[in-house]
Amino acid sequence: MRLVLLGAPGAGKGTQAKKLIEKYGIPQISTGDILRQAVADGTPLGKEAKSYMDKGELVPDKVVLGLVQERLKQDDCKKGYILDGFPRNTAQAEALDGMLNDMGMSLTAAISVDVPKEDLMKRLTGRRTCKNCGQMYNIYFTPPQKEGVCDKCGGELFQRDDDKEETIKKRLDVYEAQTAPLVEYYSKKGILKSIDGTGSIDEIFNKLCAVLES
Ligand code: AMP
Image (cartoon, rainbow, N blue to C red; front, side, top):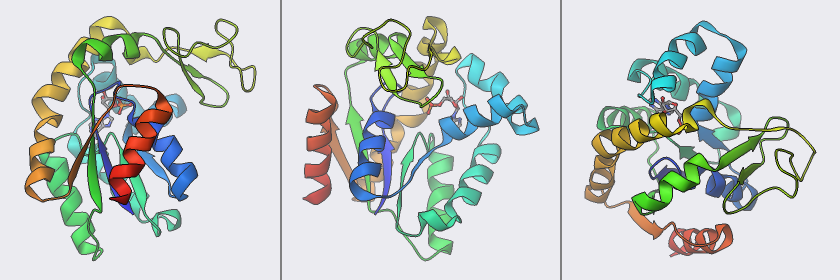
């Protein structure tokens, strides 16, 4: 199963992708996570990417496409994968089609996780992640038992640099202008499925599985 998860920042793509990994045993490929790791490692690519990420802008296609191409060749992708945060614009979507075509493959589905704009802001400003195990929380909806501390492993929780209000506004604008048109792109290809991304994590996951299995 080769999936694309579409949705605005804060729509819950990452959270749902983690549940899909558990259920289907296929890896999540999050270009945002790969880029954040490169920034944390201080690699040349990370340094280049950071300037765009801090402003809430997209990292140049050339950089991201190179990363994805390498990742898709790895062994764990043979059974399929969940693309989370990629593609982000039409040029990336066309490049992905080209890569898959060269490998004799195609996408199974593109799933759009739809969340009203009013909800996204709160989801993003409230988002916290464990430094140690990556577990995610939201201080408004799913807070940890003890402020700033991970329930699972006791690690310290942090807020992503780009989850600050000004950067969030920019990221949402970039989404509307560049990524939202992909809904139409995949609809025209006949592989788009949309789900309502409001409700509890489990409710959304059930809707997601229902459209995947339909
Ligand atoms: P995300 O975690 O998916 O919200 O991504 C965080 C940031 O990483 C974005 O605001 C972009 O700066 C960058 N990024 C992630 N994925 C992509 C992509 N496919 N193309 C360009 N930039 C990306």
